[in-house]
Length: 193
Image (cartoon, rainbow, N blue to C red):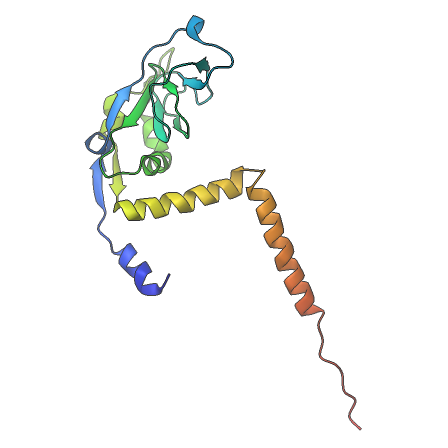
């Protein structure tokens, strides 16, 4: 990538839009505990980022962002596989020229705004209207995809101990060997007569 490309990307127009204008934000569908199974095909998200169980049906496609609206209200999740969103999840569907994972990362940056709007009660709640009115930057789809790619790689490096850490260790080992060899390589000393 050259400097000119970087400059063009930095000067690319960015629109600031409400989430409700770029995606349909829907509430999940209630499922009761007796319907859940321990080893089903699809995880069920209700009021936590951890599945409350499994179900043999799904109501959300893979690669979908969701926000918890009750219980752990304001928490933000992204599921790489199909899942069931229960009624305490707000899901982002029918995104209009916006990468769903870009929405996820944009929400993470604005999580403090969501948490500040959680209604404190016996069960904390976050209104869908608050989420719909949240404004995020919307660069071109190409720029969104590049940002998501960079953040995904960084996330893997930092959080996936099975792939990120070994790759980083290998890179540091090669770097160490390179500098070790450079530091311990001397020109042959020639004694002048």
